[in-house]
Length: 215
Image (cartoon, rainbow, N blue to C red; front, side, top):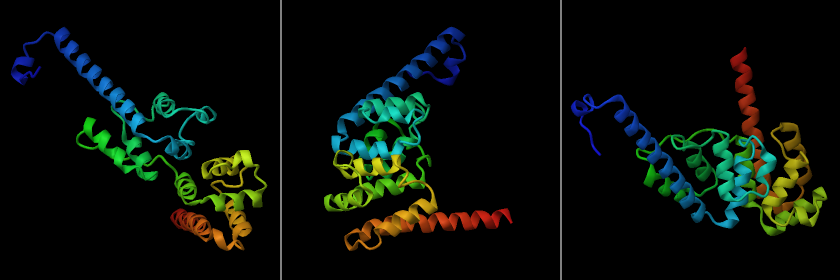
């Protein structure tokens, strides 16, 4: 129903309130439809990567381990990180994980496109890059160096999660330098060292700049 501004002035407050409520219901319905569509288009193999990306954002992160993609979205919504009028994080998630094709689904429901957020930390972005880069033989090599059991390193994402739980990988320069030192003699892990080394150098530069600002 399209109402001109002049006609709207003649409507009773109750009718205007009902119209506003209907619009809100439509927004909520569209959001739910979009979430279902996104969930149906996300491959099972991409779910662990998404979990790694959003792990720090979810309040009760322990509940994410066995969650389905719908449950991950619900956890994000429960924490007010996404919602019917707040979908910027979804754009960021799919950008960070390389699933930009899913932006098209959000675009079907939201126009103009909302701005992407900056909620996913550089550390989590680095972990996503790490998980995407680790090949089967790399996973085996790193797992062997750290004594990670086979059940905890079946995939690159299992290994990344195991190392973060053990604090062998964390948002700390000393920890990451220790990781680099352990892997540096492994010729087959150069790509991994490049990703982690780039993260450390950027973190050091950020700290240097912050120190200059404080002066």
